[in-house]
Length: 78
Image 1 (tube, helix red, strand yellow):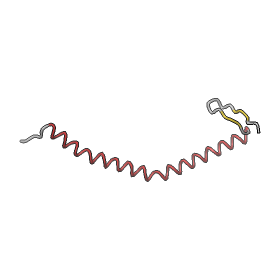
Image 2: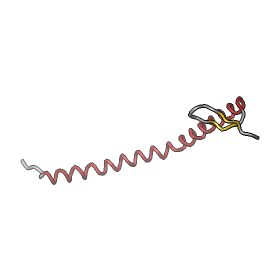
Image 3: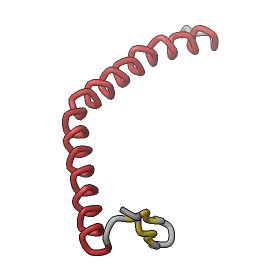
Image 4: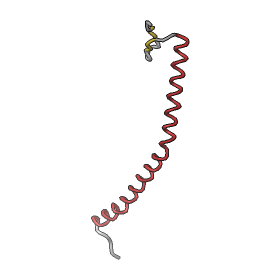
């Protein structure tokens, strides 16, 4: 029975792994590309929710600068 040398075996394993790694990367990029529209929509929805929440707070407390860490609002002189 013949046996490959360690160097030959290592090179063969690498030559098999490389196309698999590339195929995996292609798949991940394909998925990411097709998920982009959903992410853009989600970003738009999140931004709208943020604007609505800010409006709700302004309606309740008036316009001001909010310290998000403490919750303190410093009124803005208009």
